[in-house]
Length: 209
Image 1 (tube, one colour):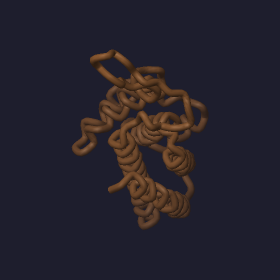
Image 2 (spheres, rainbow, N blue to C red):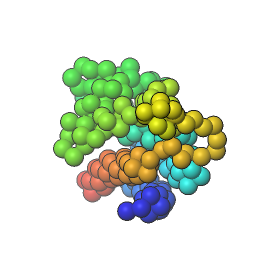
Image 3 (cartoon, rainbow, N blue to C red):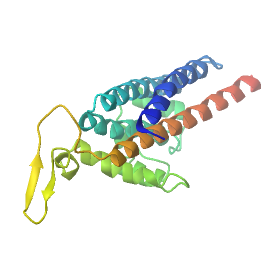
């Protein structure tokens, strides 16, 4: 797929996520966890809007940190499945201002970002999570991920480089752009899968009632 085709897929997923949120909220009663999921989805939708706009505007430097922010939403949603108590209680804690990084999972571990990324990456098919976490942090904090967006080697023998300050991302390879867009799509699918799981759980509540 071309970069534009992947960005179009991301755009189309936005409406699907909005519909998923609406259907989930309207299934059976309204729980605190619904408000938590609504916040996740609202954040997700607007991050996706920003990501595709920035990518099309050749502003990868601004778009890249959004991959890490997007992953943050998935990690927080995943955290709700690790606690020993009811997820509604978990949601109430977060909505009330508790930091998830200060909450513990059922094994007594603080659910900090690095821990959540490592644990989620242990699931089959999700090994890429930890790599995205590390790379994403490199785009948020000043690192070589940032410097390579403004300079590149021109001639190794002559030891010359080319640097730039401008409104473009020409120093970023198409492979890196494609990789970021693909990961954004994968993160969205995982967010949708977890919320769909909650929707199914609510449907079972309704049937029992």
